[in-house]
Image 1 (cartoon, rainbow, N blue to C red):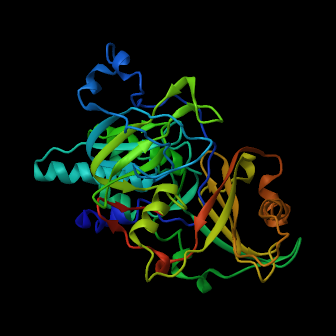
Image 2 (image 1 turned 60 degrees about the horizontal axis):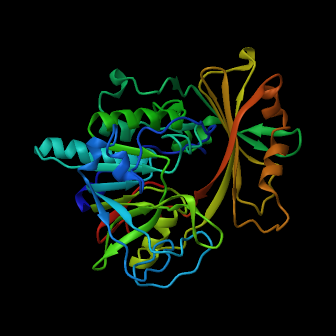
Length: 413
């Protein structure tokens, strides 16, 4: 596994953000279905019959107590969302289980299958994603540096990867007031902000994840959207998989008529690609001390909207970053505005969560920023088609924890 973690496309995930990513969550049928407690009935008919051979039943522990996130059998727990009765859970065995269907998790699953094919071996890989479909929880729209994608799929252009809008122009604006600003000359900008001459693209990260999911399934990866990992499974001091959450539990912990137990997904290696503050990842980092000797992680919040604008105001490939107003000098943050085909503007603001003013409202600051002439001139006559927000890791390289642990690894950001 350490070899796999060393692969750049897996270690970095697949993207390098030039800003925050955002998109509208879509409601759509899941690609696959995990087998519920009624598995034995469902197995009598398609489509579960082909899966039933790989499933075994885990008998309930005598006098079992409810399960909390990350709890091991034998521990006592109390919680309104946990069943107070012994629960029989089914289990499925894999070589690798990936938690999270984002760019890092999908690229990790793809690379495992690619390495297995290169070595002439067979492996079973499963990806679980809490969103209703792959990409639905990705806040899409970002500046994408395709180096890692080149490593994963050298012929991605011929394969139809959804990268259409090439970065064409970079602007960096310092906003000094409600209607005043100045543009910093391009030759003074650092190389990392030279997207137009670096072969970067403005993309929908959600669409890229959907495309990666198609490639993963083509390689034999099983993908189960709509199922969140709620418990990490341990044996002999190592991670041996995850379990999905029980559903249909009353407030008093008893089973409702619609109760369905979670299912255990057991694996030789479990890869956590949950993103910022993933619950299972945080538990694993605490249990194995993966942050020891590392700088404390810091966080920000990113707020994003996608607008459809007047075609006459659209400038394909324009990348505009800005700092200053409406944030003060004591607040870490900045904003971005990207033009992506067709006539879409992806705009947002990132605010560090270490702000000193306890009354600051990042959402309201974002709305104020949209009234600045350097932003409003693109939005006039347009309409917001999607929006979202997410937490961001802001600690930098020195805050990256150790990435491997007994039974698995951490990937992505």
